[in-house]
Every structure is written in C-alpha cells, then in structure tokens.
Length: 135
Image (cartoon, rainbow, N blue to C red; front, side, top):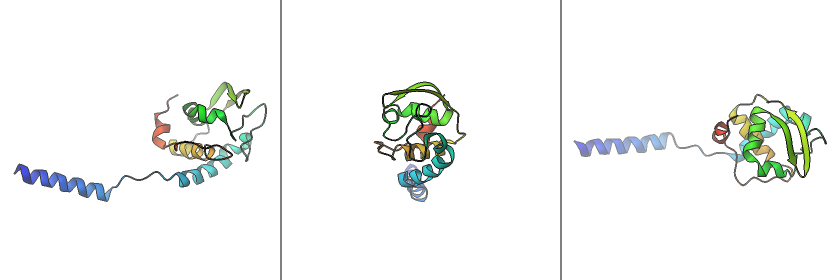
C-alpha cells in the first residue's frame, strides 16, 4: 500500500513537472517590451537616446547610478523619485512621478534601460525582483 502510494505521488509529480514546466525568463522579449514602455512613459524626460536633459533629468545612457543602485533605480521607476541623486558625477535634484506601471512592466523597462546606450546589466530584472522592492 505505501509502495503504491509512493509510486502514485512520484508519477503525479513527474506529470505535473512535464505539463507545467518552469517558464524561462526571456530577456530579449522583456527588452523589446521595455522599449515600447520607455518610448511612451520615459522618453519625454530622459530623451529617446537616454541622454536626459541637464540639469533637470539625469541621463540613463552610460549611467553609473543605474548599475550601482539597482534597487533604488527599480524603486524610482515603480514608485517615483524625489530628492538628490548623483549620476555620472553630476547632482540632480528633481522629482520623478510614478509611471503607474505594474511589476512586469517595471521589469521590462528596467531591462531595456539596463541593456541600452552603453549600459550592460549582469543579470536581468525579473517581475519577482520588482515585487520584492518596497516603498
């Protein structure tokens, strides 16, 4: 009886694993989606080329801040930003309003930004990582 139950549980686990395999994160798809979001939500201030508008909006292109402050960058996109930040040696003190993006959209736009204009992230931003970032 116990042996039969064990085999049943094992076979059920194998079936579930094969029917619902863990989905791999598709970075290229995320970047492509992020580009669309960036164009509609971010480019007005940070410009299409990510250069920003000095002294109001910091550059995202070749940005030391993005790579050194990953969680703060995610938080800024998710919740907005107010106060001083230093980007590429220059201080910016302005306000960024929350864009109203869901966690998947935040991850997508972060992946686009972190892999464009000279930026290169070591690992992709996932929706789960964004969800873990609290205000």
